[in-house]
Length: 593
Image (tube, rainbow, N blue to C red; front, side):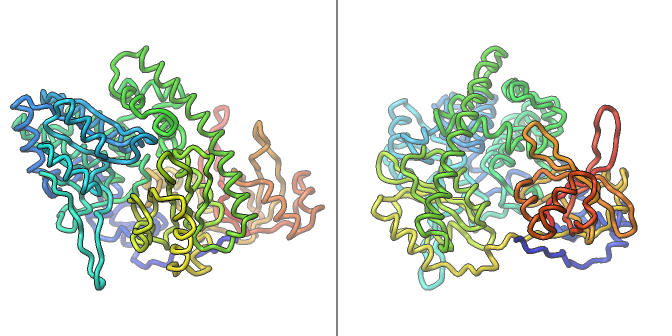
């Protein structure tokens, strides 16, 4: 079962409410998001593009701009080397668009997931050299490519890195020594001596900031003027898309980028993105982080997983509606295939964990040699959700074993991997996600090293349900729900608020949906006031819980309009339900006990 906790952060909520014209409940929720200072509250509620940070605050940004303008003026060939996921595709498109607008001689290369693996390798550098490339510009990769950049330097290629990943380090006597590649400019906010105020941006935002600075200097104007241009607004959409797709925290600058980007997507300037929305049945005015994370984004990721991400890049680049429709249709079909393969992989992973004695491991390492290596990260994420444990899924590759990891909050994946880095041929990542390559004989030593070093406790494995406000449902009004819209966009780092009420009597219920997977209930509080509540979770588990707690008969009677014996506490979120022109209040049940 999950562990429920009420957020207990203190502040003068009435004062905040009066100062900003909001309810005390909203003031409490904002405080729970650690937004405390007056300027931060104002930015959280009413932030605009004017609140974004200047590009030149990024270390080496000015140096990168000067080099690129010099190379462009000299007619030198520039090659952008990106990555095959959403962030890498969007970063590549942003840089390509910006450099093209500058008149640069520029082309792109995106690594093939299986043939090339993640990031720079000697083969990509050699290809660039053979094509007469003078300057390699990376995006969403490069910070960990020390030997590859040394190789590029030996060939006389100028290298500029734009990245957002953790900087590699060696540790001795508790002191970290960071290893910065010998590129001409390294633009990565994770560098220790970078003064950028918010380092948690994705690769596409780093690329976007470079384009703003580049065009500002070339056109002798401010970066804000570039941001408000047609190109600047289009690229902001892609920066927002990537921020969501790369699961960045929606805090500070990220939240403003996504908030503004979603508004722009309602009338998107990019033909490919517009066509992808049409193909997936997405209404542009209703695009939310969920839509990008679970509908549009996976179509881009799927081509990088099962084929080549070059197709996704072409989708953004094309100005031909017919070609856009063809590519978007292919991406959607590929994503459907990816879903089926993922489901089989998850089933095999669960079987292996529960039958092969790994259920007691604190860090799960699963070897699925037959699974397509591109699906490892998705499967790891599903297993992490199921068991609430850090999870690595490994698959057989051409030159050994490759894998991806997804973590829980209490386990810093990159740091823990660094403790046994001698086992890898290659690795990198963040606190919550990582990628790696290793020899097959190192799988078991890898599992043992992670678990031997692990300090996680049973409490870390229990799902934590944070309740923002214990609040009776009769507090909810249409005006209150509309006020909650000020908190959007919701996502990682800015979750939907959660409210809770004790002792709700479940009066009646019915099962809805084509797949009979939605429960709709009438519930009543202790004063007899009734509310409509809907549940999109695991109905089978809910029924089992009711039968165990209240008896099978009571559980069945609930669906015949007589659930008098069933009383539960619930965590919920209120919504406005619109159906055939009728508007009503509806509580969405998230958890029960």
